[in-house]
Image: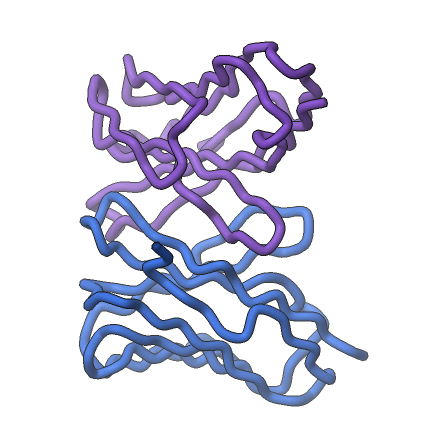
Amino acid sequence: NAGVTQTPKFQVLKTGQSMTLQCAQDMNHEYMSWYRQDPGMGLRLIHYSVGAGITDQGEVPNGYNVSRSTTEDFPLRLLSAAPSQTSVYFCASSSRDSTYEQYFGPGTRLTVT
Amino acid sequence: GQQVMQIPQYQHVQEGEDFTTYCNSSTTLSNIQWYKQRPGGHPVFLIQLVKSGEVKKQKRLTFQFGEAKKNSSLHITATQTTDVGTYFCAGPPYGNNRLAFGKGNQVVVIP
C-alpha cells in the first residue's frame, strides 16, 4: 500500500491564482481531512469528509473548497490564492476500524507571493 | 477557541535526561491521541488512550490519560537524539472523525 499520497510536494503561486492540491489514499478509509500547519499554530483542520459525497467545514475553511466523489480521492481547491495561505498542507485519512488513527500524507509546501 | 492546549511549546533537553509534556482539554474527551513529527516530516501516530486513568508504555515513552479525561501527559526517559521533533496531542471534541490538535511541543535534544 502507498498509504496517503499528496501532489505536488512544493508549489509557488501568485496572489489571485487558483490551484488544486491532490490527495489520495489506498486504504479504503472512510474519513479524510485536510490540515494546514503554520509555525507555532499546530495543525488546523480546514475541511473533512466522512465518506464519498459528504464534506464539512473545519476550523479554517475560508478560501478553500473540497469535494469527495470517490472514497480514494479528496482534492483541496484554493479559489483565489492569498499570501495568508502560505503554509504546509497535510492530508490525512482514518477509519473506524483503526480507532480513528490519522494517517498523514507527506505534505505540500505552498508559497503565495 | 483552542480546544486542546499543550505546554510547554518548546523544550531543550539534555541527552540522557527525562522530560514531560502536557496536554489539556477544555472539554471531556472520549480519547486522546499522540503524534510525533520529525523535522521536515509529517505527523506519525504514536498511541491512543481511551480509558480514564489509563497508562501505556512504549519503551522509554509513558503516556497517561487523566481521571477526568481532560488531560494527558507524555513522559520520556533517558532522552536520545532520535527523540527530537514536535509532539502533538489530539482529541475529538466534536466526534471521533474530527480531531482537534494542540499546538505541539517542539523538543530539541542537546548532545
